[in-house]
View (spheres, rainbow over the protein chains, first blue to last red):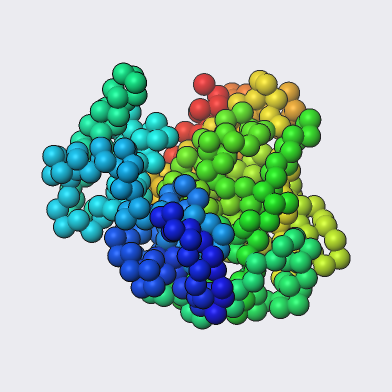
Length: 160
Length: 275
């Protein structure tokens, strides 16, 4: 067991973990943050994407021990985030989810694309989503929802 | 699947990491971003006894511009290169390559040194750094040594690194102002490993022209006839030169489909430079 201290969604957490424990399993099994989903467990499907130190990361490819002294944000941690708020509304309006398994990571990935200004065209959004698999094949609506959220946020920024 | 049981240590300096590696030998694996190693552990392809985490060592994250060269620390991430947060010796080639490398959530943690040390045949950096004539500095118990990136990989997931050596940095000569580069990665979906990968450098000012293909069933392959053609500024049939080079690479055992992919990637990447 290795002692770790980290921030999860703004809260300071201390725990003892076996080094083989992935960040994803730590979040789900130890912290009960089950909005982070596990699909492939080798970095291909993207369902486990969270933020580590503010940047998107595959929580199946990060060990919990490697997150000592880091800040982690999961889908449960974006209550007051204007970008996630716009994305959630637009995912709802555009029917951008079917089973919902990929959705938390789609939102986190889309938020990063919008903040890095990589959501300016359909092509750009599709490129940026290439690492997030939706097995309901709902990409058309997901892309529309992200494009619309990006437009709304862009307008708001222009009017501010 | 879940990774097998393993011990873990996060040394506070490169010297400490090298000591630990010397002590534990092949039982230990160095982990930087872990974007390949943890996947391999989850798939139970790798089961090291001890992980030595060098990912956040400050001395491995530094970048320096030394006039004619740029030295990039081994633990600089693909995302830092993509975003232009570090000096670029390659006039846009390396940031362009980084955007094609896996997915953003992997690029934020995967490192250039990790890519070199693993030497996955389909990886981008071994081929790109070979084309740029870069040199790795590796650190072991008896000190440091330099090794050309072109000579570092010896085969599929095999390198000239000793079991007790860690890549510290990569020193990359700057392309001159008039230099041109070409890059083409063929894969079925953005971010996948390459089916074929070609990198072309034409730096006539420095007298350095090189055409390299990756995903070549082994170490990156320098296409000598095609490199010669590029150094002469074209003039011959590109596909003939590429075909001659691929004919000589019989030891790579390309099937017809792979051979076609490599020929297409190399030819198109060369055209980017010669146009």
